[in-house]
Length: 284
Image (cartoon, rainbow, N blue to C red; front, side):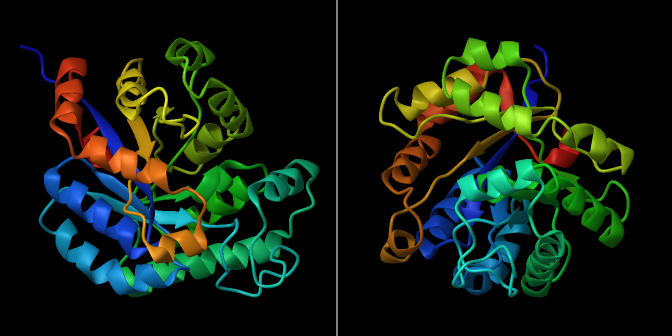
């Protein structure tokens, strides 16, 4: 019997709320998740980082920076980027990236502050860097991210999420195709830039859907398991909805649905049927 293939199953938004941290911790302990990205500007990250560190000593998981440049409070003044103490909505950030009008030094400072906050709470460097709402792939921002990783860390020691997928794979999946095409187009320059700076990346990115109840998340997940790739990354957003999350984010019930599926036996059955197993990036 051939050995199963592997994929990184990565939960976004660790540290956004205790309810999200609880959900991600439980799925790591169950062996479902093999990566999670931390929003280090949020109070829950500081509360939960050492508990996650202890968990990571028992279970194979990558923990990285989920660079946050939208909606939440910045760690720095973020002059020209933040308005009244809040980072911009993603649409405004994209427009700034496409018009070349983003404040580069403010973004560089905020990136550095969030990496510092990761290292201070974690006690070491991140395993990877990605971005909340995929902000790290945007023109202008991605170069700052690559430069900072290359400046801070030894070559090859920190991987970087890319968000591209071949158009044929996107269309065959038939779920989240419009969003996947837009993000893939915005991210087109990132893999080459990372490679030129000796930063490893995934070669397949999956998990887009519209967060609706139909099709069920089990069907979204099943379709995301199909397709080519040697370094497959599937991102997800499991969480338990609590008052803290309600005060900070609009994505609520879909997190509960993802959590219920990812914790279920059905998830394991689908992974087995696809011939895949969750793995850390270093194992791919």
